[in-house]
Length: 192
Image 1 (cartoon, rainbow, N blue to C red):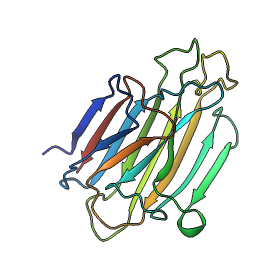
Image 2 (tube, one colour; image 1 turned 90 degrees about the vertical axis):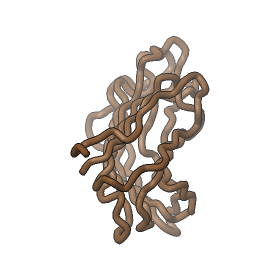
Image 3 (cartoon, rainbow, N blue to C red; image 1 turned 180 degrees about the horizontal axis):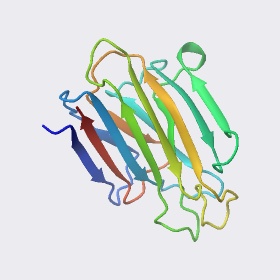
């Protein structure tokens, strides 16, 4: 077995699913790396769409936490800084893991957002699980569309947590408002 192996990969067809589930993840590795690039089927002038991640199909409110910084134009201080866990910030998923471009009238259908996430020690059963990573949307979500105002690169980086010690056996990437656009693709790799 190599030090780095692709466990699953694929792309979205014309069915515009609202979720992509990577199941039956073997416990043969130490860490996981998830990469995807994609866009939303949502058509709206001033809105982006976001993704969330759930592990092992757990949707329990309060089992997830997040702390991330997001910058719309990629320059200067973060536009948003978010955190949440437990009763005061109950999360039923790893929220806002990426913002995906929406399809505006006249917009290029090739514009995609890119994300890369790491799950350290995913197969262990003594520690709760975490995810660290970053995402960016080249040209922000409305470039080169006709209706929005953002014209630079949107960036997001952060850490997310899952309050469970179980080994990760499935990862579901959920779309916030619409479906995943055609050619949205993903790769899940195991790292020794």
